[in-house]
View 1: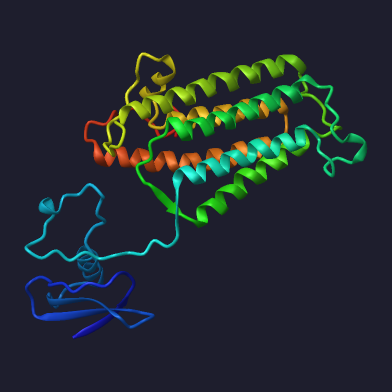
View 2: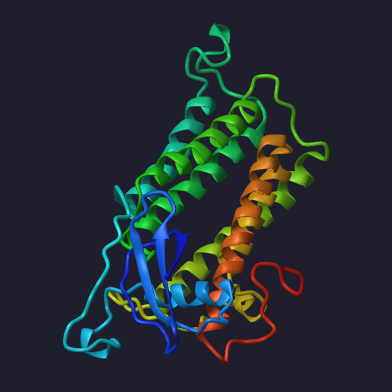
Length: 309
């Protein structure tokens, strides 16, 4: 009998017909994870790893029916403790309300931020006030979408995520708000023309983002976890579905690019870059999921940027 250390959940399972047996233990606790009997003597370690993986079963969904599972008269289920959890709605409301409130503190120049002589003073630059309207609109929109539009396939996420997400959103909001609302802030290089162009980009992308969220909402009936291929609707903003799998991310990145052009502020540009990087990862994952689940998935679509990425 061979003993191999491995990581994973415990299971006792039969192996293929052969003459050797392999017992797999946890390298740290020495707990027996799996017993493979009658393993081929010529089996490689890679093949044994594959056998071990197969014995661990698959994750079950809430809607799975016991009768349709490959089990006999007795079903053995393994419980995995996911740790402390928190609802997606709570996380989203917290991480979005923070930037809205934090930005306004800098906009109104509350005491102890820029010095006593600037307390509750107002900027003379129109772009500063316009930036505040755009930033506030964006996060109010996100809060309302969380409450009335989004339908979550999973009810909870790890509790630690709320601290990570809030650090990201709240931190960047404070950083960009400090410079945009600073008494020494200077308007963009090309003045009103640059601001108007940026505002146009921002508004179009915000409308596009909302349109995609509504299309995705209509794709999944209330209380259902049904997954379908999203297609363009009569709304022109949804036509981006013809080219990318996650146009909501495309529009989101576009909004922040517009905001960065409007304010000509380095922290906003960095926030846009970091956000684009993360949303690209999410979009690629979503795109791969679509390809695995739907054989007739449109072949011309890219994850987030048409024809490129």
